[in-house]
Image 1 (cartoon, one colour):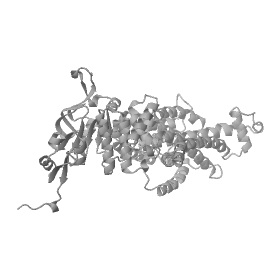
Image 2 (tube, rainbow over the protein chains, first blue to last red; image 1 turned 45 degrees about the horizontal axis):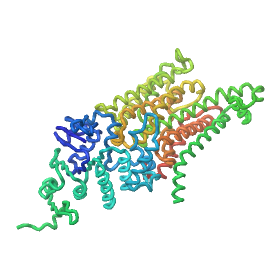
Image 3 (cartoon, rainbow over the protein chains, first blue to last red; image 1 turned 90 degrees about the vertical axis):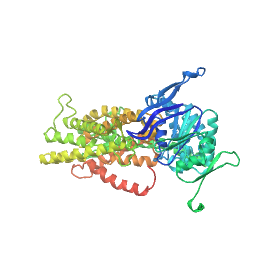
Image 4 (cartoon, rainbow over the protein chains, first blue to last red; image 1 turned 90 degrees about the horizontal axis):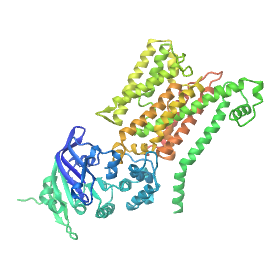
Length: 275
Length: 359
C-alpha cells in the first residue's frame, strides 16, 4: 500500500526521521508507537502527502491488477494530485486546534470533498456516505448541532466519521482517540477492527501501549529519528524492548482472556530495592 | 424527538430566513434612502419617480413642476445609494473571506495592506494635483480611483510575493507581510502629506472614506471589478469552509490549498481594491459584519457570505444616509467616521457578551 525507500522525513529541510525504509502492506493494522517527539506525526503527515519527503522515496500504490502479482504500480505520493491522494487515504488529525461553528453534518460531508465535481455540490450518494459514517461513530444524534458545541471527545468522533466518509482504502489516525473515555476508545477500535476485517488498511499513532497491543497486528516503534523496532506485536512487545525504548521499568504480562501482551509501568516508590 | 426536530428545522431555516429578511430590508432601504438628503423632497414624489423609473408607474406629476426632482432622486441619490450597497457588500464579503482564510478574527479587508496601497496610490494622485482629472480613454472613471486601484493591486502583489516562503504560502507569513507592507506604505503616505501641505486636507478626507459626489459613474467603474471579485469567492465558498480548518486538514481532504487560497485572495483583493478606489477607506464594515452574521447563523461560508453581503450593504447604506443628514446646512461627514462610530462600540458590546465562545 505504502512504501518508503531510504526516506528522510521532516518539516521543510529540517529532518526528523533519517533514512527509513518501511512497507505498509494492504490490509494491515499497524500501530505507530514511540516517545513524544519521536516523529510519529511527521511520518503520518508524510504518508498522507501533506509533507513531501526531504529525500528518498515515499511511494503509494496507485493501481493493481488482481490476477498478476507483479503488476502492482507505485507512484511517488507527493506527485499525486491532492484529490486522488485523498481518495486513497483518509486522515484523522491530532487534537484539532480549531473547531468550526458549523453543523456536524457539514463537517462530515467535507470527507466527500474529493468526490465532488468542479461546479457540482454534494450528491445524494455523498449524503448517504456521510450518514453511514455518522452511524458507525455514534455521532448521528448530534448531526445538526454546531460542532463547536460538542465536547472534545465528541468532536474527535466527528473527525473519525469524516475520515470514514472519505471511503479511502487506507486510514491514518494520529492519536485520534486520545480525548475519548475508555469505553469510547474500545468502541472506536472495535469498529476499526471490523473495517479492517473488510480490508481497510490502518496506520494509527497510539499513545496507549496496551490499546495498541490489543488491536494492532504489527507495531512500529520510532525513536531518535529512526525506526527502533518493527514487527508482529507478539514478537516486539517484550519487556526488554519496552524498557529500552521508553527508558523506564516496564513489566509485560499476558492478557488473561485473549493472551495478548499488556504492559505495566513501575512507579519508583513501589519498586523494591534490590540489594 | 419532536422538540429536537424543531431545533433542527430552526437551525437549517435560519440562514434562509436571514437572507430573505436582509434582501427585503435592502429593497425597502433603497427607497427610503433616496428620500433622505439636503434637498427637500416629498416622500410620495420619490416613490412616484422611482416607480416610474422601474417601469411600474405613470410619469410623476411633480416632476413637471420641478424638473430638479428627477435629477436629484435618480441621478444623484439613487446612484449613490446603489454604490453604497455594492461597496458595503464587497467590504463585508472580503472581510468574511479574509477571516476564514487567515483564521484570524481580527482580519478585515485591510489586513493585507490593500487599503494602504490604495490610499498611497490616491495620495500620490492628489499630490500631483491629478485628483479631479479624468482618465484619458475612460473619462467617466477619473484618475483618482484608477490610481487607488493600481496601488491596491501592487500592494496585494507585494504581500503575496513576500508571504511566499520556500514556495509555500502560509497564513502567518501572509499576515506579517501584510503588516510590513501596510506600515511601510503608511509611512510613505505621511511623507507625501508632509511634502505638500495643500493636499493634506483632501488626502485625509479621502483616507477617512466618503461617498460624497459619487454616483452612477462609480457604479459603472465598480461593477466589472465586483463581478470579477465575486466569481472566485462564489466558486470557492465551499472550499473556504475546509480551508478555515487549516492547511493540513484541507490537503488531507484532497484540496490544493495554496491554489484555492490564491484565488480567494485575488477575489477578495479585487473587491477591497475597487471599494477603496471609489469610496476611500471605510473601516469596520468588513470587520463587524462577518462577526455579527456568524454569531447568528454559524460559520458555514455559503450562507455566511450571502447574508454578510446583504448586511454589509445595508450597514453602509444607512451609515451613508446618516453621513449626509447628520450635519445641518448640507455639510457631510466622512462615512468612514460614521461606520467607525457605530461599529466600534457595537463591536465592544459583542465581544463582551460573547467572550469565550468559539469563532
